[in-house]
Length: 330
Ligand SMILES: Nc1ncnc2c1ncn2[C@@H]1O[C@H](COP(=O)(O)OP(=O)(O)O)[C@@H](O)[C@H]1O
Ligand SMILES: [Mg+2]
Image (cartoon, rainbow, N blue to C red; front, side):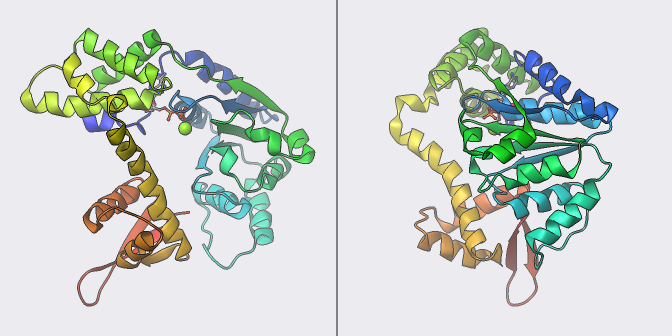
């Protein structure tokens, strides 16, 4: 229970203190429901303040109105071809992974989206190598909405005027949460996770999250780590237990926390540079050559997580021993 509801990727049905943003963004795309061109939007604000969560909630709601929801994180799909292929994949269009040029992809894309209503969320838009794909989106059909997201408020300034005028973006700035807001949010998640808590412990977690750039993710990780211990011993969450996991007190541990995220990315990079497909042991070798530091056992654990998160798929290949072939999911 706690692993699921305190996971940073979990999107609750309700997002306290972001209700207005959910409504405002939904309204921007409402014209799609009447087959009209919507206004597009750009969300910016610091990390861990609900940008992705709000976008995913809007996608969930608009799907119920018959609009096809597309969510793309540009970290994993950086080129025009990768984004278009991923949109087609999410529309369940069978499309060969390899051997197709961008022009062919664009043609296929244009045909497939004709007459369809789509809301395309492009998260971490600053990592998109080339904004031409945005131009293609607006050109393909009047009933495609684009919702762009970035931590960087200047992310769209790089777009050339052709792209910018084709999109007409309304900007929505997400403000950081206050300690009170963080307390409500963390309390809600703790309740969902059925974590026996006391009010003060949640408040302390909220205050520590506030100190960490108001990042909800940080607060959730405190609740999760402390929650595991509390659950085991059958105790309620205490202030001391929360504080024990506060890495801002211990820079060494803070670095380790950051590496965890980086290593997932490094593993994906190593797999990418092996043409997106390789045996697990080859990827590990490449990862070490590229300066990776984790041991093979931990590497396997991270690969398992990447598979669970659907970034990578694996295939068991018969032969001597069990060999696992890994492939990046585009
Ligand atoms: N208002 C909120 N209510 C409940 N959970 C929230 C709220 N805002 C953020 N979260 C949670 O915090 C975590 C990080 O939020 P996310 O949307 O991924 O941040 P980012 O702004 O970096 O995209 C997620 O687990 C998300 O569900
Ligand atoms: Mg995000």
